[in-house]
Picture 1 (cartoon, rainbow, N blue to C red):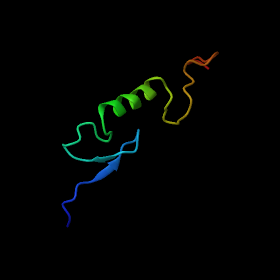
Picture 2 (cartoon, rainbow, N blue to C red):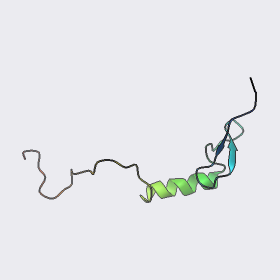
Picture 3 (cartoon, helix red, strand yellow):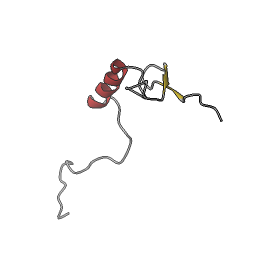
Picture 4 (cartoon, helix red, strand yellow):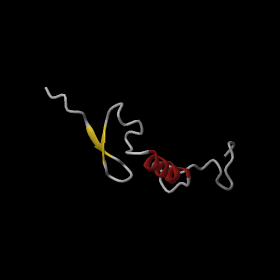
Length: 64
């Protein structure tokens, strides 16, 4: 069995990141990459696909 640490790619820039306490922003390589990713989610550039939210749709009511 190897004691070699797990290494993953930063989801933002692709740099190798050691999955350990040495990498506090894992899976990101840095705070910068973490914040870029957060900004993309916050501005809705990224989204998890799913059924559309129809609760605000025109003409919708609970009695329909």
